[in-house]
Image 1 (cartoon, protein in one colour):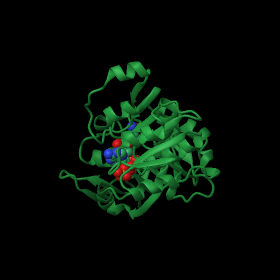
Image 2 (tube, rainbow, N blue to C red):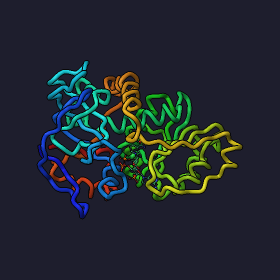
Image 3 (tube, protein in one colour):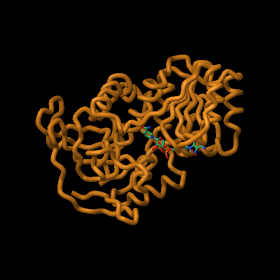
Image 4 (cartoon, rainbow, N blue to C red):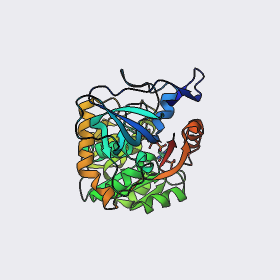
Length: 322
Ligand SMILES: NC(=O)c1ccc[n+]([C@@H]2O[C@H](COP(=O)([O-])OP(=O)(O)OC[C@H]3O[C@@H](n4cnc5c(N)ncnc54)[C@H](OP(=O)(O)O)[C@@H]3O)[C@@H](O)[C@H]2O)c1
């Protein structure tokens, strides 16, 4: 099969490798499209190696068609259209996926666009509703509502019945976040985010923050938490090591969490996928949730996709089509 590999000089090239075989409990999927994630750029640069045993091919999510079943797989059929959360291997024509990480493509959703969903929906759902415990009537701040994960997180938080504040780089991107349902969208390039959140919440702060900034956003994020607030860090785009004001957490009985999806054991990923299927997937049927696709590019243009992502112009997801 054709696959994208990373050369010693960190270039992405189209290569040919033997087809993967589905192991016990796995399903072989012919890829219709692969979602591009920021983590892919980190892996390419050598900063986010695949967990032991995982494919070293980049790519954390795909959509496609089931073409073979490994031993002991039940509930999936050859020919079925699916999308899948991966630990790796997405930038390819074929990928073997643990059956517990498959999701059906909802009726009416384009098979290629379905590749934009698994990583973003599982990440946003597990961290907003799971770790963050976001409930109806609460206020949430989503840092980066314009991103692949963020554009889904905004919609999920709206669907949960939260009041949604978000940040994006530029007035136009902020306006697009409002179109996704955000009540308040703050331009982090020109506005004072802390002041804007203070104004929007009348000084109370927010109950949950979904954060992609990490260390560089830590002080402001902690400052914006309401009493009982939960900061959930899922990215370290502005650094890993920061200073935490524990005094502020103490007085507000607030908490800081950090979690990654990729490194979780198979059973935990399967449990997240099952929860997503039961509680978030129906939102795709009734229109509360939709894939946000910036563009589709041929798989062979993976390097251009990474350049585009680095340019900061992508809103939502880029997809690679083999
Ligand atoms: N922990 C996990 O399990 C997990 C899973 C998936 C992703 N992630 C992480 O989540 C992050 C987002 O991933 P992605 O694939 O969605 O990337 P993406 O599409 O590139 O999104 C990045 C987002 O960060 C925003 N951003 C950049 N600088 C900002 C700032 N100063 N203030 C507020 N927002 C800012 C961007 O907004 P503008 O472009 O509008 O400025 C954009 O919305 C990455 O760090 C990734 O590693 C974690």
